[in-house]
Image (cartoon, rainbow over all chains, first blue to last red; front, side):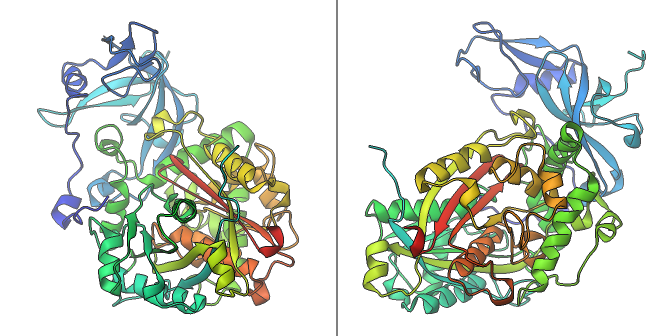
Length: 147
Length: 392
């Protein structure tokens, strides 16, 4: 855990994901507008968190398939006090724990919606939010088609 | 035959630094303050220590805090480590100390932790430091403070079991009552449920007064074998009777259930080793980083049925005269929370309760106690059961 205390300059920038060997394809997929889930060809387990083996059966026969992008809010919390200066201007904002239609859960945040209207069980759909040339974040909003 | 650590070791010294706002004292000096108090309490000298188990400090980011601390204190131990499982570290320090002594790696271990989150870091950097415990790819880009992970479990608990904001607030109200009786506590002015509900949002459903403090301070303990405690003539050794841990996930989105945690398994292991049940525990230290955390832990530790934690607290079952007095020093919510050492203050209080030294806040007849530490959005769970000589 021992690491240098972040400088004030670092603290004012939002953390950007740095893809690693396990996650490079996942972040590349997001840049192309696809949320890639890992499907295990041995046991049919589906996982969001990208890794080199199936968490359920240990197989390395994993295949990327694009998610439907639909899900429901499993839980959430509206942040009023930001975790550091980088997020202060965004407050209040709703962090979502989304349960995807395919089963896995993921952390995201609400875009294009009223944070005060978020509720457990609410339907959401994915928005591909390109925040830099390299990084697109998977975020969520209430469905446009009213589904 | 099942191997057991039951009563193989005892806590023979406990000590604290000043806590709260303590400017001008580094984490290493706060740790030394606590260590000297614990050694004095044990009647030992620093050269009697052959092992050190520490937690890391954000304001003193040594790669090897336990080693840096030993150099600072002027000792050369033959057993040392710096443990890191977030807030659960405190209970693991006791469990691992007991195992190391029982296994012959050390004879007398100093457990220590200190940090200066209030005056040693700016508040922005303190918050930033806390957020770095979340995953940098899958969690932090969305601006999720560690508080938010606990908040999402609480909202889910409210959704599944009807737990109310007022019930959450009662945890803070009762712990403040306890802190008011504790010399040196950081926050002692009484608060009401309305005060909590009107204290401003941090992250829903948590208001400012639902959240633990940010503090400076440290604590230290001397743990030795039961045989050495007896040979030294320690008047009131506090025995380590059982320990258990459980690690169910790293990422909040992979937490198996948001409302039932690994504390079920960690406490079951500890109860089995100690040979007791929740019903027999006289006083408890329950990790209380947020009010809702306590409600969920009361259920998972077996003090009340699942889903009834809110009503249990509203019925004042966690204070004097109730089923299980908890956090009688005021806890992380009102006594002090200096990060990883925060849960060590629960241990300090429990040791003093079991020695009958707590004066106005003494729980009558306290012989058997539990401390539960947790961290990382319920990712890490560790339980330790302690008892007086009467329980051995």
